[in-house]
Amino acid sequence: MRTLRPAIFLDRDGVLIEDSHYLGDRARVRLVPGAAEAVAALNRAGWAVVVVTNQSGVARGMFSEADVVAVHDHLADLLRGYSARIDAFHHCPHHPDGDVAEYRVACECRKPEAGMLLRAAADLGLDLAASWMIGDRVSDLQAGAAAGCRTALVRTGYGALVNPATLDRDALNLELIAADLADAVAKLGLTCREPCAA
Image (cartoon, rainbow, N blue to C red):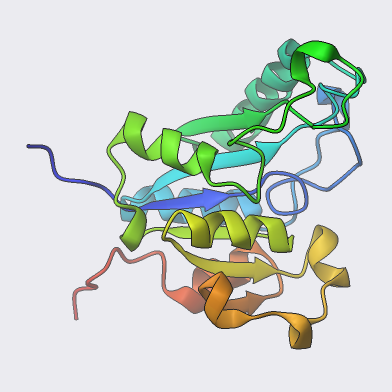
């Protein structure tokens, strides 16, 4: 029986990269300041780092799944320049009101559903109870909580628009609101796998 590994699940747009609204072009990828360094620190500490991102632009006919993969390949290349890596990318191309029939479904992978996290956990042998979901939207936190993870909200991207007073911290398993990914990693002590050595 293999030992399960804890993970950090990250939303993509607004957390790792600037949210440029329906991103299907690798030329528009811009890292959030400090995000690459934060991922590198998580890698060094032994956390699995997994991106889980809704990409309804596919269902809306704005770009293809191949475009999403190209963006992720480019993002991985950018992160390598900081000695950082993503262990897996998971995206949901669906939307129940999409224009492309193939993707016009109410699925179990689109956040706030937990499908992408559950699939990653099965693929990589992840311990969801020991894992974190870090995102900039309430739907990110809902997906993390539904998967049994603890959650953190960053105030980059759409997180800047969220009123913390409206959040049900218990229902969302929300343990931290941070300025950005680097701040969340630092404040949560995620550069040290739990339990941390003294």
